[in-house]
Length: 317
Image (tube, rainbow, N blue to C red; front, side):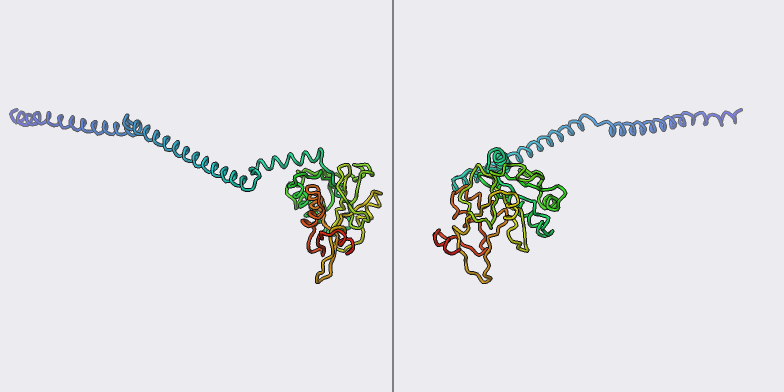
């Protein structure tokens, strides 16, 4: 018994120590778990300080963005102001107002619309394209583009008609291919003849082979140009076409205001492209002077020069 008592006593004394160690171990583990849980909660849910910091960052960022937008707007306004000042200075130097591209486009559009209502009428007869090569058709399409460009820039543009232009023709396809916006041109495009549109007594066909010279441009008349590029130089094609339509013919007064000029090739021609004829007519309508019109637009390579003496011009032809 004594032996057993001696043995059990130490065991009983050690038991509290072991329980204490176990409790301490559990407490430490719980403390660690508590720390981990706190850390996870802190990571998942920001504290008040973090929220305040985030709000401050967002507020500063918004202020910076507002300041940047204000600076950009100010620079843009300053740029526009300098541009306006330059335009005003340029207008003062030239004595004419300067407009933006948008304003000029609107003015041109309105001017062409007014010409279609009240302007002088000019037809381009495109019935002769069948006798032209593909190259000549391409050149004619280019002339029509330049013709429209000149009319757009004119102070008093003509009301233009492209007559007998078939939608399935080579010329129509070439015009659409070469001329951007061709289908939106302020031009009357029709498959009808000029005789279908106007009475024959109002029509005047311009041909270099006509006997009578054009003296002035009459608002009651409708002028017709032969839409023709002929590199083979077939004689009197436009004149024959006018006779076929049974309408009167006139020519530009080249013989009355110009003389032949000596050149190495001894080349002299009165045949002009349709855009060149339009340029001459537009200038004459603005100035009332054939000399100014021919001097400005008659090509120098044709072998003629303007003379100030009308009598000398007539004697030289």
